[in-house]
Image 1 (tube, helix red, strand yellow):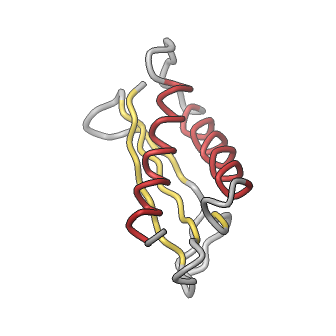
Image 2 (cartoon, rainbow, N blue to C red):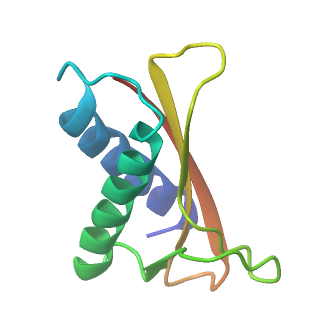
Amino acid sequence: PTVVEGEFLVKRTLRNKLNQMYFGKGTVVTNTLPSSFVSTTYSIMASMKAAGDIVDYGTKNNPVTGEIPARAWQDAIEPRRINVVCSVKYAYPLDWATVQVSTYI
């Protein structure tokens, strides 16, 4: 797939899986909720890597390659929204791409 198709696939998969896990489940926003989103994001990325949808996902900061670890934070304007950003690597090009999604709880 192209980079655009790969990005769309990752965003759609992340958003759908995060919504399945957290939306409408009565989840309460706490200080630990963003770390739960990060753990879930890594689990989703590992599944996508195993399925061959992506080559790898970011686990460390590397400003040379653009690799970043997954991060999640509560939106400052809409407190029910959690934002997630991560980096993924596709088969081509060999650089890392940053993907960001938002979901409501």
